[in-house]
Image 1 (spheres, rainbow, N blue to C red):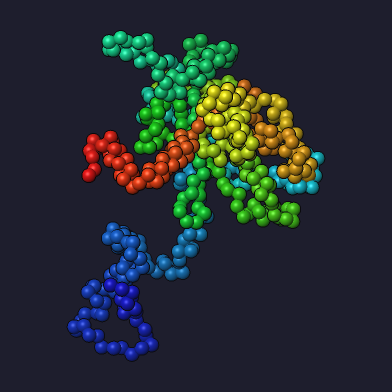
Image 2: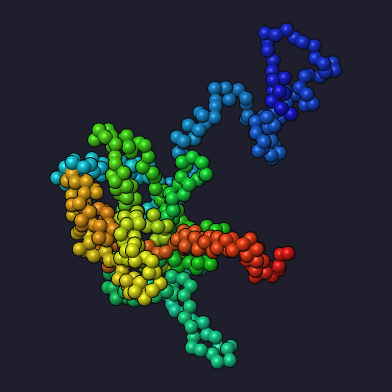
Length: 487
């Protein structure tokens, strides 16, 4: 069938009726019983070659369903449908209030070279609205107290050390300590030790359990298609007292979506131009992108969460036991660009590492003893560093360029930017070093980074030695992984 069928069944009232070549009593619509069948089939075959028979069955089901009336489609179009869907906010949709989703607004201060303000609060701001997020403490409460959860009896509320006892060996060594999860790590045991030193909350029963809830955050800006600019930037959280063998299964849906970060698009550029009469520079756009990320995290780490961080929150857990739960941020996993964005560092600058002060010229010595000594000197969120950042920030809003010597002189030695990140602002008072929160991302930084680069280089070496070397490699690989040899 071709599009010619659609032309064939069109009726033109201006033309004289032509005798049909079909037998008497049979309308001219090919092998189909009626024009509707003919046109629908023509739609299936004539519009695209990617349809399936199931697609056709779905269309038939739609137009034959109760309540379907073709008159309702007059004046309707695909463009109008897209506009209605974009503007629609269902009460019980993906971001339902029943699931704890709320909308918030943050303000991004706008600096400009030579635009002087007495304080940062006097500078104009760009409001970013319709930020969908879940209040972190409400999310913790809903998950921990869910008596119907299939995980309610699988949470490890008390840290411990795990040992493997190879007593079956002929000469058994001492038991070997094994690390598998947060709840058998030194970090958990150290947090619990600090918790036991704290004065108990007034009114709590002596036997009330005080427990640590490890929070494992992730974020990753993701392109939704190979073409176009559609993207999504989610923040989600796992609970570290649930075994990784459970939360690591996608079918368990153990990840809790926390927020979605919007992008600063063309609307931002137009707003900035409307304020200052000129569009933002690249430095200003980077500054505002970091600021937006920080403001959203300040929205998430609100006063209620900080109060629970310090004093705990009394909850009846899903297993029926009442505990005072103290949330703790154990790790934040992200790829390298997102780490430096969150921490307020300059990407691939003189000190590119988010955890130490190794310089670019020293990277080639990775793995040496000198490198090991350098790595021992960790980045530290010290009061001196915070003061330098705030001082540089004041210069920016006093009209100095972000790239001016007055600003960079305070920051460049440690590859900083004029931004105090949200984790430093909220958690430094509790002795938290924000630079230690950001863990290596194995997928982005090793599997898709270091290892992929090394493996590709090794394959090039084999290919340079001759095609038979690659064939031999494949043979060995197949015999190792599949127990067979390809001929």
